[in-house]
Structures are given as C-alpha cells and as structure tokens.
Image 1 (cartoon, one colour):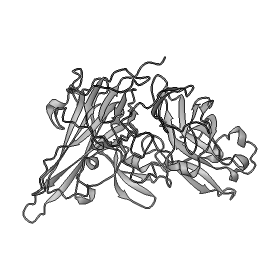
Image 2 (cartoon, helix red, strand yellow):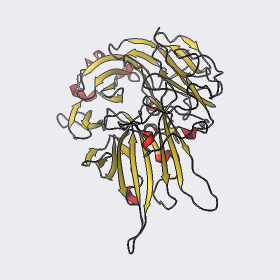
Image 3 (cartoon, helix red, strand yellow):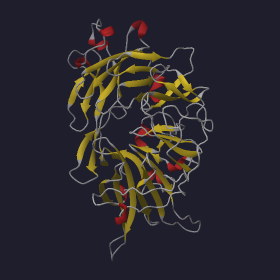
Image 4 (tube, helix red, strand yellow):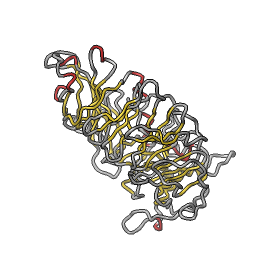
Length: 477
C-alpha cells in the first residue's frame, strides 16, 4: 500500500493568535452575493507582521515567503482520516495544512474550566496561499450537554475530506441539544457541513440522535448504515441514500468520488489461480480484470495467464499504476505500467521497481503538476519516469543516500527527505542535488509524522517548522 503524500508536521503548532476572527459560519458579512466567502486580509498579508524567514533559499520557490505565521505545535493542522487509514504506520498522525489551493488551520478556542464541563468551541480558517487573506472562518460550538460519541478535540470536528467529484473539501461537524418538553426527553443533533477550498458551502445535513453523532464521510456522503459487503451513504447536500460496495482488503482509495474496488477473484473460466478484478464501487459492475490488459513486453511469453499477478496503485483520478509481478530471476522487480482505471487500457509501460511487502506501508508516489513525470519509491531507492512514454529518467543506485520524495515544484525541483542530508532539493530531470539541510530546525530524515513541506494545487509551498511560511512558485527554467 502506498503512503500518499501529505503534510504531517512534527512538533509544530501553528498559533493563530495573530489572526483575528473574520466572520463565522452563518454571519452575513462572511459571504458575498454568490454565497462564497469574502476574502479578509489577515494581519500577515502585505504587512509582514508575521515572523521573518531566516532559513536557506528554497530552489524553485520565491526567495522570501509571501506570508507567514508564528506558531509552535501540530494541533493546528487539520486531521485527514483517509490518509491516516492509508498507511500501516502505527499511531500515524495524519495532519495537513493544505486543502487543494488553500491553506487550512484550526484551533481550539474553548474557555477551559476545571470546575465544570463547558461548551466546546473550535475554529477553522481557509487562507489564500498567494496573499494570506482569509477566505472563510468557520466557528463550531458544541454545548456541554451534547453527549455525542465524538471526542471533544478540533481533529474530530474539523477534518480533511472530499466532495462527490473527488475534489478536496473541509468537513465541519457541530452539535446541538434539543430540550425536552413534557414527557419528551431531551435529544441531540449533529450537523455535518462541507466547504470547498474557496470557502463556498457545498452542503449540510443535520441528524438527530446519538447514533448519528460520529458518522464517517466519503465523497460528499455520510455513512449511515454498515452491512457485510456494502454500506449505505447519504448525500451531505440531501437526496436519496446510495449503496456502495466496500473496498477490497487493504485497498486505499482509487479514482474520484467513491472510485473503484480491487479484488483478487478465483477464475471460474479456467480455474487457473486468482485474477485481479476492478469494479465500480457505486454500481457494483465489474469493469475489467487482469486478462483484459495488454501485458508488458517482458511478460509476453508467459503461457499460463494464471501465473500473472499485479497490484493496482493510485496515480490520478482516472489513472493508476499497475505493477506486474515477474517470475523467475526477476521476481523481486515488478514492472510498472500506467493504465486507465475505468477500462484497464494500457497507457504506458514504465520501469522495473522492487515492491516488496515492506513497501506496502511506506511507499511513495509523487506526481508532477502536469501529470507527465512521477517519482516512485517503494522497498528500494527512488525512480523517476515519464507517465506518458514510460521512459526512465533516473533511478537510485545502492551507493546513494535514499531519497524519500515529498513534492515537486512547477519549476521542476523535487523536494525530498534524504537520509543524513535532511530536507533536500534535487533537479527533477537529473537528480542533481541543488541544496540540502534546508530545514535544520526539523528532524533529519522522514518519520511517521514529520513532513514539513507540502504544495497546494496551484504550486504554493507551505513550510512548517517552529513557524509557518508560504512561498510562491517560480516558473520553469
């Protein structure tokens, strides 16, 4: 199982005391006539009131940050339950400060009292990465009497999620209490709201009762019923609930929305072993199996189709990496190919790479913004290759420090954790080291909760150490 690229900050809370509240959810001053949030300038935008950047210049990015915030600790980055579930790392604290083309920060603004339980108050802010302006502020209030199943922490009430089309969205949960009347007992309600990175409200759904206080969200829906092989999901913007098939065992999300299910099924046609089968999770329809895919050239001579096996890994919303096992002397090196997720059509035949069992919980796939180049790392060293032609650009050798890829700039710079070299910038096309030890205040090397650099979908870089800095992308040289 690959570990998706996410921004996981170790030992860095981003204090929000510098930023004033700018209209909570429901405040008429917080939105314009279209329902979108009005951008509101933060103190750090344009006035340089945030901390000055004293670190090394970051190749491929602006020499100075476009804005910054003072901080210290991980709790202000939003929790991402899907990314936490897509790794086998124990106690993986999947937090990110990036939501599509926005920077997202959260905070607990509750008034703590040791004498009695008080209401809980949490706040989320969506920032424009180019200016530091606040696109939207959302305030959550949970009464002391609300007895839902969610733990009263920001990461349980404000989470990274996605909308129906697979685009990123912020899930905000709030609770309320309905007082009893006569013989009728008091009850609780739980409201689930989703926001786009722009600050636009996408949908809202309110449930009554304790059973609906801790629903999981997926693809703009809420899981309202579990069954043996499929679950029922209610659209968060209203509408008819749908039945969705479970994913295959240990299979991380594939495709946009509910996406695809991958499983190995015994071939009833010729009884010759198992075969990889891909189906639509929403309709349950089988779309293709391994026998429908054009084989890599190296496997053309395999006579028995039952001897073929492969893993399907995510690449984009409509493409996947199909890694083919090889028999014999090359058994440890799988052949990477790019396929269309819906049809299984072979798009490109790529290089060989070792995907041993240990790589399932620590693999990396980092894709360039234009989708043309990918850097993959699984059990061994990293390999860079072209997703359209399959041509290999470079691969690591045994005498090199291990590259753990994090992200790519629009200008063709690969940022990675390199053992003993810390945060390192490399030229994507050649793997030439441009600079290293770029974040000396952070732990050298990659840990389960220490990825200090992430890129928004429009190329801005967020660097979080003791303070948070946002850098603009430089054009490709």
